[in-house]
Amino acid sequence: MRGLHTAEEIRSAEAPVLAATAEGAVMQRAATGLATVCLRLLGGAYGRRVTLLVGTGNNGGDALFAGAHLAARGAKVTAVLLDASRAHAAGLAALRRSGGRPVDGTSPDTGLATADVVIDGLLGIGGRGGLRPVAAALVRAAAEGPGLTVAVDVPSGVDADTGAVEGEAFPAMHTVTFGAVKPGLVVGAGRAYAGQVHLVDIGLAGHLPPARAHQLSDADVAARLPVPSPTDDKYSQGVVGVAAGSSTYPGAAVLCTGAALRTRPGLVRYAGTAADGVRAAWPEAIVTDGGPGQAGRVQAWVIGPGIGTDDAARSALTEVLSTDLPVLVDADALTLLAREPALVHDRTAPTLLTPHDREFERFGEAVGPDRIGAARRLAARLGCAVLLKGEATVVADAHGTAFVNGTGTPWLATAGTGDVLSGIGGALLAAGLPAVEAGAVSAHLHGRTAQLAAEGGPLLAGDLVRRLPEAIGRVRGVPARRLGDWGP
Image (cartoon, rainbow, N blue to C red; front, side, top):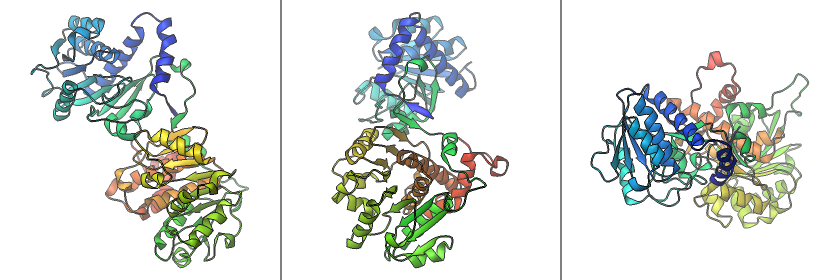
């Protein structure tokens, strides 16, 4: 599990390391790591053209020292200085000794039009607000050029803590970050600007506080997926109740029930007015056309996809939330809950809300640029876990623990995929996972399944249901010889 650390946490961890090491040692570690990644990406240094975009802080120093390493190995390095009088003096001297060439930021001879790689050292983790005009012009030129784009620690223009971008930002294909991954590299607009993230160890591990935000790996998810034992039966592996769909939206019931079944709990019980469609699609489910109270014994509920917002839907929501069972609330049920948030205030059982941005805003607060903060605030206010859907889905609980999902594809932006996510999450709640972990694991599996389904082009929500068992197998790593390469 990869911890995500804020800029303040990084600076606090750096302080004792800087005090205990020789001057410049930490920067040399960072610069060596940066140069090593660039060498790997370039396949060597000799004859390669490198342009450094150099600001006035330590971030610029990292770039200059890395440029010196590359120049010493035969690269042709040009350092474009935003302010030569304030550039990192030792880094600039090292670059010159290695044969690198510094130029002014307004020079027409930046090398950006022919560079094999452009290294962004304009701003560091303390950068806030939009880029200044000269920096913005350099970023645009880098984006238009032919070279690989590599950011130092955080792409300039991206808020390290939130991923917010005001105006322009450096469009990195790769980001080499130091000490720990910053949240802004994996969430919000920053995720799209960061590209592939490479973590370089600079000796902070023993000084960082426990992370409050995380990203799960396939191995983390596999460890949380229940596996039946020889003594299990259908009741001991989790029984999911699904209250979804209607005569208007029967597909929501079919998709949600199918996803719950294919996540492989012991049993799925459907209760709702789309019973005929569910019976036809999923003979494995136990189906009733009555309300949740008619479904029989369950161990967790999913409610909301396609149920509508009339009195009958409200009655079903009230009935489910009045139980002492875990509940996942989605779609129409979120609209109803936003009108009566008191329905969840006193719940002691795990409760997971799964809004997209517009549904989130019905609870009285815009998501804004800080998606982790927004999810945490709503979770704390309602006393439950919140899964905020998006390009990088965020899951947070009332205590501030958060997960940022790292899987998925833009092809997920199609009707019904959220119903599939709800079915997966309900099955995991029935298996006994805490709400915040059920949300994080379901988002990871949902994204992995979408990546698999999109290998052949555009996907439909039903494709996710069909490919879900294979995706679970790949996450678990078995049987790899039949399933082939999973990829990055």
